[in-house]
Amino acid sequence: MGDPKKQRKKYATPRFPWRTDILKDELKFLGQYGLRNKHELWRHETMLSKFRGIARSLIGKSPEEREKMERELLARLKKLGVLHETAVLDDVLDLTVEDILERRLQTIVFRKGLAASIHQTRQLITHGHIIIENRKVTVPSYIVTREEENQITYAPRSPFSNPAHPLRQTIAVTPTTESKPSQTKTMEEEQ
View 1 (cartoon, one colour):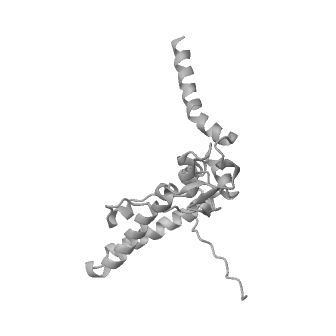
View 2 (cartoon, rainbow, N blue to C red):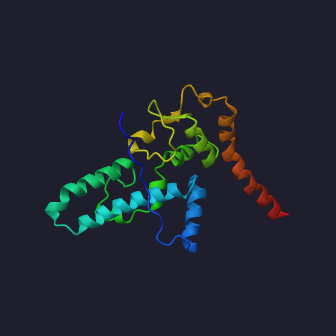
View 3 (cartoon, helix red, strand yellow):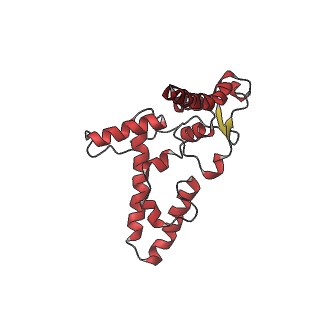
């Protein structure tokens, strides 16, 4: 069986962890994307930092040296869905952590309307109710590729696959309830 591989950190912490603006941004991302803790955010920031570092190193090289590596980097980012199809190397430097966070399974499932909230989405994924192309994925921070994006559904054995399930009915009702408060405000303003 052998010795288990030594676990290593997959993230770098912020250089100035107690700056107010950094703390506010981190808390905003935690709430907006339903992240469990700041380690998840830092892991995605580190991933973005590595992509940008590769792009910066390629810009300094001669065109003959950088052609192959540039093609590979752009192909990987396009496959992940972070960059659009006509992107060039300079677009890699314009990426933000939000571009990476938008490609997480948790965010995409929520945007598709398979759950009522971003936190409920996390629960559905970790409990195995979401599949990608007949493959159960239980990691909310899984980065979804463009090909896989259209194949995200409820697991066939999940009780949520039944359209009559109360959760699915609540999700269908949720968009209409959001429009009601704005209608009541207008009626209050009229009075």
